[in-house]
Image (cartoon, rainbow, N blue to C red):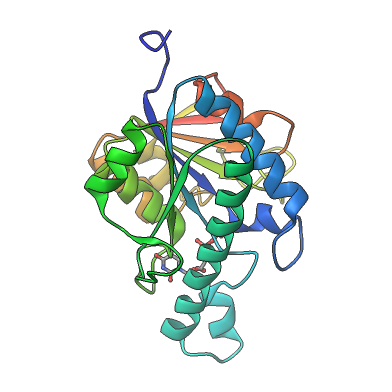
Length: 239
Ligand code: UDP
């Protein structure tokens, strides 16, 4: 029943990298699978807001290294996230879910502007809200925006799905085979140890506001559904 559910309202961060299935652009098969997993959890009653990354198109920091002005490159990155939102909203609607896309950069023909109170109303009506264009500000990441949106629309927790890693480790598991995964870790330890699986800015925003975070791997048939249901998965980060 809804009283027993672990979470009433959550924010789910999806990395853009996952959307591309390892390439530039959107892999419809991958996005369809992600949409299905979200739809299953939403049908069970949890309210879901989503922030989508844009790494499958552009990352500002990478374009900067290739000689572009950082801010302009970051705006390109933000526009990429909007394409991902449109793709995901389409597949969510094919699953029978109602969706609204809200963007931090206004583009009236494509999406609603970001209006937090309106986003809350959509969620209360069972709609899935997708937040595009990050914070609308260069030098920010979609991880940080996820924490900010989760706080502003009163989510119970923020779920950071990751592409190549299934939680928070004591060192980078891609380079250190001895790395150990935490079931639970505090924000202060994650920050002091410099565990970079999630941005420090996102960790510190959640820590200061005591918002729980779950970091989990997106690989698998039902990892997103299980995370959104509140099943133990990945690493819980606490204040
Ligand atoms: N970005 C930005 N401000 C924001 C969010 C995103 O400038 O508030 C830009 C930044 O260039 C970033 C890109 O958009 O590299 C894509 O977002 P991100 O790297 O967070 O996506 P992910 O790695 O999660 O796919």
